[in-house]
Image 1 (cartoon, helix red, strand yellow):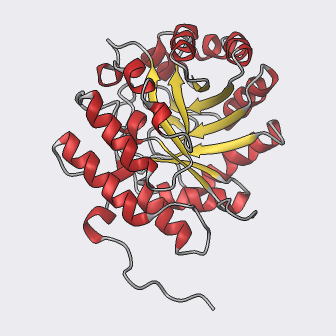
Image 2 (cartoon, rainbow, N blue to C red):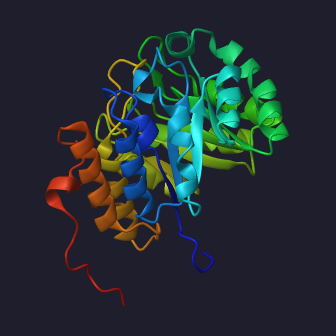
Image 3 (cartoon, rainbow, N blue to C red):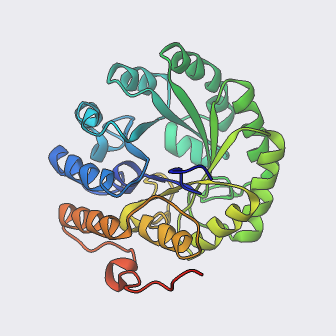
Length: 305
């Protein structure tokens, strides 16, 4: 690890993935949440998504949110897109770090974006051209990488093939997503191992949900395999509106706690993350599922010798 660079890089996805299944909240409340998150020391934040406002009304204000991101120059902001139209909107709004989602199953792909998985793969190349012409960065996220609520188990070979094709067609980085939170460490290692073989040398991240209580175990297994980029959502918010049963992401504060208490730096201030979680709870008018919100962290960590 170089001085000042954490051992693991946690991307905060609360403003996008955390809010997309919630009732819409005012843009001002989202900016307050991003402000609280930026104060935690997190280096990357997924700010919003440029998708159909009819399909995801809670993120209909993507342009308004993007217009305020200049307030935090030390944070790298990204946005999710589902097609060429979303890419054009994002670039016009000044966001050039984009995440394009490809579902590994046809059932989820049709429910999510109204086209087959293969058709979504075919869009990677033209999306990459648009993003690169604007000087941007394209991450391809392989969703439903373990199981689909419509089609059942996802063949690991399909995930690996999408990863290979994504890099060949211009993706700058990859992420594997356990969209409905069904994976356990054994399958996590299997799928990630295949992806690493099919796309060697490519930056690889992991997006986990804690639906069945396996999120942190999967993150720890992936760390042992060499993965250093993880998504997490403040307070455990999140879920996919087009995947039945998909509940919250792993909580940012719990993922950071696990790593920090194991001597693995994240650059994240746990107290400030809990403050941000409280901010999100107030904005949504309800308690959040994250367990550390109730328990807190350790007041007197064990000294390291």
